[in-house]
Image 1: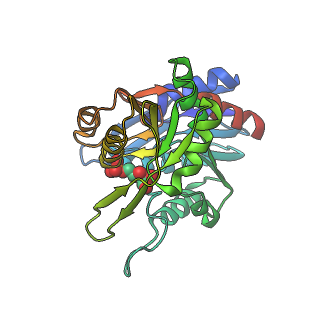
Image 2 (image 1 turned 45 degrees about the vertical axis):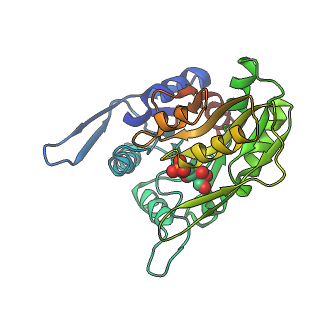
Length: 293
Ligand code: R5P
């Protein structure tokens, strides 16, 4: 197998190549003056199974998606046997159903586009809803980075901390973290108005007085969810509050707002390379690719 180092995940791909021992293929890329993307694989993939590592997080997620499609096409034209797209953050995954009349299902469109480009299989990490993968036109799998994030906090001395998810649907995330942290787990309730996007969070029967609370979520976008959750647990007497997310998009001043709300540290993964990407996905991606080989 060969690991193609997509321009959006170069460091992560190099780590995966080092951990698996699979050779890496570098990619030359540029953006033309009119904004169009260009990629060229700088090594041979003839007769190989190929894993293209390319996240599609903001900024410029559309450009990153097109780079991914172009790399898949280049790999197939270069004689690759099978192309696995390794996409830690899969753009458009949250539009996985028609919430309002007149909408489409963006994530399905993305998957069909990737299939047309030459992708045979897809691996992602903590997709917002696993059910969305069922409608993809190729085998697709989501891995969980929550144990790695929880382990970061164990190393930091937070064994026994309370694992909190900001809404009921994400309780499985808090449970995965709890298995590593060894403390209690719970969730808040969150309701979203589909037209305004505004959310209301409530806590029922949550006892975190005097505890260290780590709020776990799949995505931090504007930070509103974590800010609301942090305020609630602070009011309920939590002594220390941290937050962990797989995909730390941190749009606008999200980081500042979260820290201002009393969160002591924000920890994310290299699905979104940046200031908070303190945990690498390389171990779980490598394990998956070695098993697939
Ligand atoms: C949605 O349910 C997700 O799990 C996240 O909670 C959400 O995307 C976070 O968005 P924001 O940071 O804008 O509140």
